[in-house]
Every structure is written in C-alpha cells, then in structure tokens.
Amino acid sequence: MAECRTVALDATPGPLEVDLSATAVLVIDMQNDFGAAGGMFDRAGIDISVVRRAIAPTTKVISAARTARLPIIYVKEEHRPDLSDIGAEGSPHWRMCQRMAVGAEVTAPDGRPSRIHIAGTWNTEILAELTPEAGDIIVTKRRYSAFYDTELEAHLPTLGIRYLVITGCTTSICIESTIRDAAFRDYICVLPVDCTGQPARSGSSYSGHEESLKIIERTFGWLSTSECVSNILKGSGAQP
Image 1 (spheres, rainbow, N blue to C red):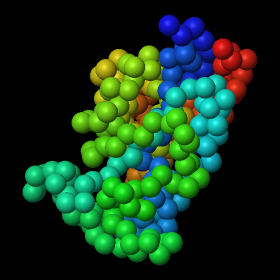
Image 2 (cartoon, rainbow, N blue to C red):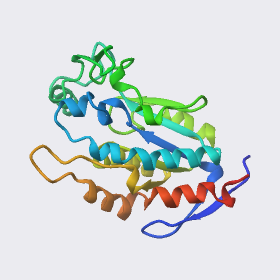
Image 3 (spheres, rainbow, N blue to C red):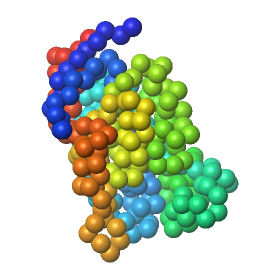
Image 4 (cartoon, helix red, strand yellow):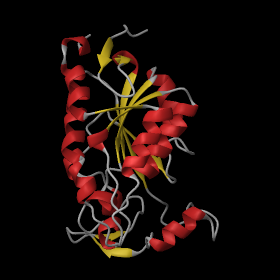
C-alpha cells in the first residue's frame, strides 16, 4: 500500500486535503479536433482560442504531476471508421455528429489524409504540445463523460486512485459530464479553472463556462488554479 502523502490545496468552496499517493491527472479531449487549426472545431467555425489558452496551464500541471510521479491519463474522444458507435439515428449524439460532419474525409495540415473525429487519424491525435509519454494511460471515449463505456473505471481502482485533477475541454460538456460521473462514484475532483474552457456558441457571447464552474463548485467538486495545483505537486509534500 502506497504511503499517504497528504497536502493542503487552496481551492473553493474551501481548502482541500489531497492524498497525492491516491491522485491521478486526467487530460480530457485535448486533441487536434478541438484545439488545432484544421480540426473539427476550427472547420465548424468555432473559436479554438479558448481551448488553446488552456494548453500552457495544462502543460504546467502535467509537468508537476510527472515530478510528483502521479499517473497521467489521457482521455480522447473518437469514433470507429464505420461510424457504428455514434448512436441510433435521431439520437442526441447522432445529431451532434451530423452537425459536426463526423467521419468526413479531410486533409490534415501536414498533408495526410484524415477524417473528422475518427480513430487513427490526425484529427484525434493529442495536441502536439501535450503529447503523452511512455507509461501514460490513454483511454478512448465515444460520449461526453470519460466514465461512460470506457476503460477508465478499470484503471482507477488498480492505481488506488481516489482524487482526480481534471483538465481539458470543454467546460460544460465533457468536463462537467466527467466530474458529475466521478462524483457519483465518490471520486474527489479538482478542476484548475485555467486548464479548461468553452468557446461561445456561434453568433453569441454565451458559452456556459462560468455557469458550469458554479455548478461544479456548488455540488460536484472543487475549483483551483494550475499555479496552486502545480505548487503543491512540486513542493516538499509531493516527494515520497
């Protein structure tokens, strides 16, 4: 059994005691389709600058987590080439896939043939700035929550995880969905607010980002910052 490494994290709605020996970092959907020029969001006319602003803070958290020898789990959303996993015709996810042209053949910025949101293509690769390293875990999801019909629940008990530092996009969809599912399973989630974001709806200034943060803080988890999280991971309390 791992030795308990408890640290105090500055967070809201209040300070949180975190056992680093039972903590993992999730990096959710930080992939080309959401955060790179030529990806699904960019092609749909969605402003990806919000996602890109989360890259540097997320890099900081990942680096500190590696120093503290915490598991890093990348979760990426992608579909099978035959689109057999996008849901029944007319279902909410099926409709989203139609709107976003999931499966369409495109040419990646580097000239490779690719397809929107399809496994094994440039579109679903992790952003270059956040490339996984050997030993990191990669989990595929086909819906918004990282827990729904994925291998994540098999990995976490094996690693002895109780606390999750959540990073990625987008705030009110995949991040909130994952944090809600985690809370239902009694995981304690910390969201560094600068490690997430959500573009505004087309033709509107509304994104849902702030409202989602309030919901998470009120009921489902804790909010912090990349600086606070990185500092406790790199501090003396992070060393075994």
